[in-house]
Structures are given as structure tokens and as C-alpha cells.
Length: 164
Ligand SMILES: [Mg+2]
Image (cartoon, rainbow, N blue to C red; front, side, top):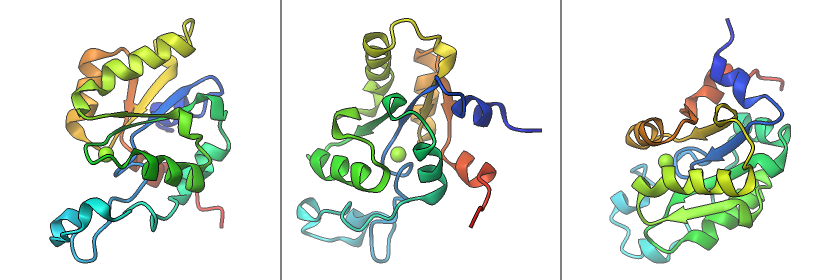
């Protein structure tokens, strides 16, 4: 039996909001620890950790088959790295910079997504919007504060077929 969320993200009119760190990237930014900051790299704030990110093929394969007008990013960014992140998602996935939304506080994500949906897709069914995030707390906030579907990015690991 195929997963219902997997089916929903493949419908043509579904609007999708991807988290960035840990969703469109693997979050393995460091040399010994997953997060650069944990490597005690003093220059962390000045290092473009997004320059070396690799495309996650199962997610890329999905995105290139979907209407780009219905693909967005929503990311918490407390370090002023918005431009680096936007450059990375455009380079790896073709998602335009003006499809990327940023917030200092992850708890604002549900309201930001609601705002974008009501502005750009005023007539869409809430059942045609999917929020994909690797953070359990954030998924819980979407569930509590919005009517939208939620998904964890491991979905792509689970269901993508290797066509190589
Ligand atoms: Mg994340």
C-alpha cells in the first residue's frame, strides 16, 4: 500500500513548503560533528557552510517533476545566512530565491506558511498544502496551528525508487 502523504505530494496542484537545514540538506556541515558549530570552528559565522552542500537526489527528482510555482522554502535563520541558503537551494534544486522565506524563530513558521498560502493560493484546499520539516517540534506546531498536511523528509528515502 502506497503512503497517503507520498500520493498527496505527487498531485499536480499540491503546494509544498520545504524546510532547508536537515530537509533540503543533509545537515552534515562539520568535519567531525554534524553541525559546524559543534566543531568549535571559531569562524563559523563567516563560513559559507552551504557552499559545499550536495543535492539530495530523491528530493531533487521529486522537485524537478513538480510545478515550481508550487514549491517554496521556509527556514529558521538566526545567523544572517539567508543569501547563502537561497543561492544553495537555487543552485541544487532550481528553487528561485523569491520562493524562500526566513524567520528568526521556528515557532513563526506555521503563521508564515498560512500567510503565503492565503496570499498566493486564496482558493486552494488546505488539504493540498504540505509542510515538510525534519524537526519534530516544528511538525507538531504545523499540526496544531494549521490545517495543512505535514511530512518528514525521510519520506523520500522510504519511497523513492532508484532509477539509476
Ligand atoms: Mg530542519
